[in-house]
Image (cartoon, rainbow, N blue to C red):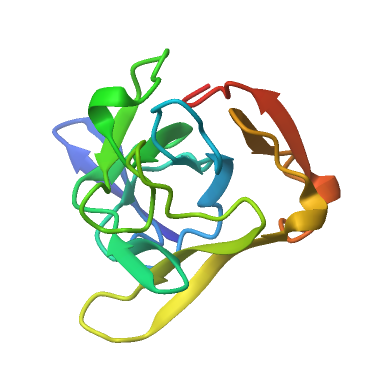
Length: 182
């Protein structure tokens, strides 16, 4: 971003006008997957929590989630700074204790709906990507790939510890039931 400042006079008062321009059209580097439910049992949907840790809102247009064989845009709207959204395979069955914004991905095939799983507990990949508006230039912002050695437990979410590589099992903590939106 950049800042420009100018002093002006209004009558006998001096006024300073400051204009700040932020990198609103560029990839917000801080957008990240912070938690995900890969293997729910007994009806709940799969879900992915995405966080915008920055201080400014991020336009969700151009953001997507994908795994091999399935891709979907997250949608329109914005995610305010310091906030999280839950991308879910079924909003009507989604556990949402903090009542955060939810994005319905039930028709996309990216996330399971509850009765049907889309992600495999024994190994899969999920990508959070951004496509610059007006282009086909898609950039993977965060990739999580796991295999059977991760020993993902049923009805437990994986929470990213925000340090280390998201490709390493050591960077994720298993949480019974999960804490979507927290």
